[in-house]
Image: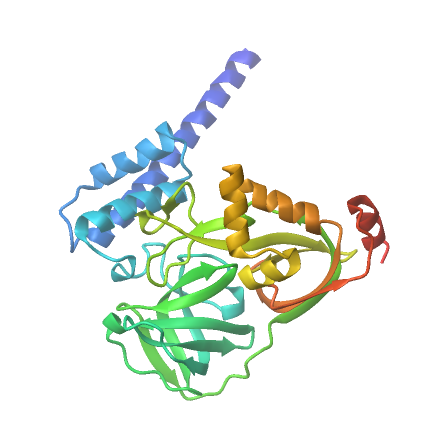
Length: 333
């Protein structure tokens, strides 16, 4: 009797889990349908079927499936992602700029316009730096968004901005759905820089020679030749290190951009490309960098974005070159 009841309970729990998953997919489908209701004649059932096919048949994570289906309808409607607004992701919540740690999320920020830069493209109306007590973040205002001009030194409440990420560094984009309210107050902008010293104990996946999306103002790293936003594209090569520095107390994830990677690894982007071509494998570059750098000590200084320290300043320190000795010494500090 117990075994039969236990089996029934397991079956009931599985059924409940399946029903919840179906309910979640339905909610995602309804959100996507609402996003495109002014642009396409689509059926909620069709949207749900596309999501279910990716999730159930191909085991794609729900968030990735939603992004893929959204991109499909964007292509069908001939729209840019910014035209949708709100991302269909549950609203635009107020967030400190230093807490932004997710790509393609929609938020509201209250921040001071710290600095304006010269736009490098006609598609950009304004570009610069926003800041609040938690730190600073780059912003881009698109020319086609037809938004009011922002003034340096002013404080704004910016609703419905979308986040972007490059080399672990996040930015926000103002689009046609963004609301702008100038606030009669001042904000003391915080310093989000950090300095760490320790042993480089790991070179993570995604290091070495990589390819980025070539589309204007899109710098996403390609996965199997595809950009999450623009689909299959001919990528442009870049060089980076995603490493872990152990200071003896904590492990810090650090990103070295192309310039910093070329400096510490003593290799240029062109040399890395030649190395990969000779080996017919881009992974050889990351392996070469790991062999050269693991076990060395570094002092790294730079801003913190999400979980990463961005290596704006790098100095090699004296220390053991053997990784095991380095770990022992680092943890004894």
